[in-house]
Length: 256
Image (cartoon, rainbow, N blue to C red; front, side, top):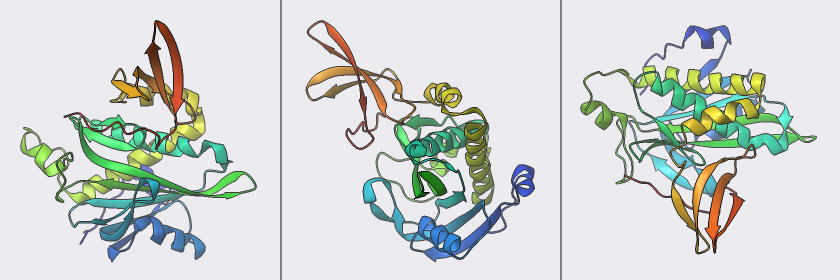
């Protein structure tokens, strides 16, 4: 079970409340329940274990003890079509915060955090829309701390084992860093817009320059659009064409 999480001065200033749980179905689900009960936002929920964690494309899984299972609720009040921006800014903010602690995190499109080509964690954004605006958003984050991981995954315990410096010493410390990073990315997006944030996101995009095949045609990843689509330059019969791929239409896999 998590001990006391010491939030950074930035989060204390924002009066962010943190709800801690031992075992629950899903931190995203719990936050929606709290929102329906009128909880003050921004707020966060964290669990030691999830029995029905939510992933992309409706996937559910058991979240083993030892990981960071966290969700943050905010009130963006942005157009519904800009929902992908929330994942982009959250991913950039979290990765940047972890990199400040000498952890070489990169981003794998569309929503994964990776180290050395292995999956460290992922992000799942859910929204509620009213009159064309996102009134509430719940951003779920899972990060491997000491929990068991599959072959193409990595946890921070095994990463630090090979390092000379242990820059993050507890799950509680990791929690504060991740919340702070997420909200820093979110605040930067709200103040500067996606066009200013996107170049920073692309600098951390592990997929940049990678070769791939799209319906039998060779291509190269050249970036991400403001709609969160993957930009791919195709080469066929001497002609060059750029296409944009929606999340879920192609699997990029992991390169270790």
